[in-house]
Length: 390
Image (cartoon, rainbow, N blue to C red; front, side, top):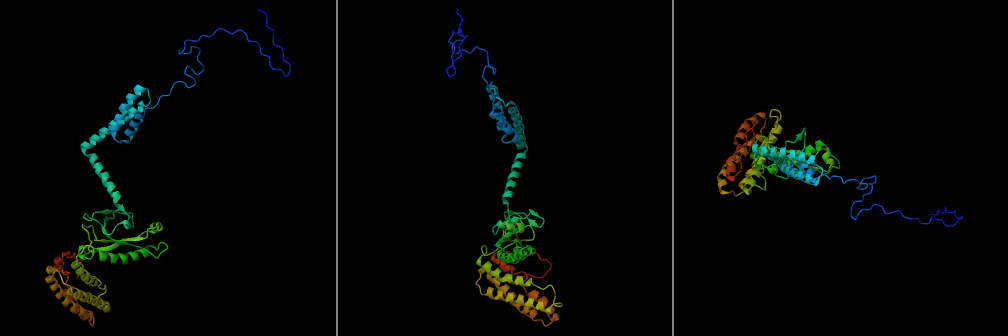
């Protein structure tokens, strides 16, 4: 074979000279089509640069573990764990530890539920949960309650009430809402003293109109109210809620107003209650210390008696009430004359001489027989050791 001549350098600017093609080597060791390549593997192994596929975590195993931890539907976590173990073995997946842990926890939870059902603890827990939900739903601000709703005030903190629990009036309760009103005329919080005064004035009137049948209330009954504090006022709560309080926990509604009374019941209470109010206005100082104040009081009582006499006598009553009403009016006639003497007493001695007789003639039973005939409360409230009650 003749030696080949080395390539000559090209002239500047001329195309590069390439060697003439020489003979080719024999073909390499290729295998049949479709068979694996038999050459040496590259630096990343026979499967390319990504190596073997990663294992995936079984989803049922995750679900089993979560169900076992949170103890929700324990049998569900147990079932998921069993199926997860089967799939993991078949599919070569990860998550075996989670499946085992979920199965164990769910098994324990299931045993506890079964034990609770046997001993009754689960039922007791369910009842307690339901009761808690009901109590939470019933707790509201007093200003949000409707007229006639009864409540328990056991959420107080010091002098402040965080909320009251609405209850059926048939169960023992602390009070009964008589109404509410909006405080107006104040651009900023008026202060506790002002709100307290407004509540006393307005709520006493509301309570008197709400519970006309005062014998339902008892001797210790009174009216009360809730008013907003500075923060509540700033948040837009400007209402005062009024309620009537029987003085102790009581059963049954105290309501006796125009929406619940018959025409005869309403007429009787409307004219008789002012006598009761006047009687309770007796001065703290006796006639020996303030004769004029006691004379004014006696005159007020007589005026209330005379107003009731005229109004009650001018009405046609139901037949069952006619006879007891006649007897009641006769006693009022006699009481009017004696209270007139008391109001005109010349001095302390004359006042005391007429005082006991005036009380004797006043129907202290409040027309019990008339009340019974009209279907009103006819059991007088327990006496508090003092005079007073018409």
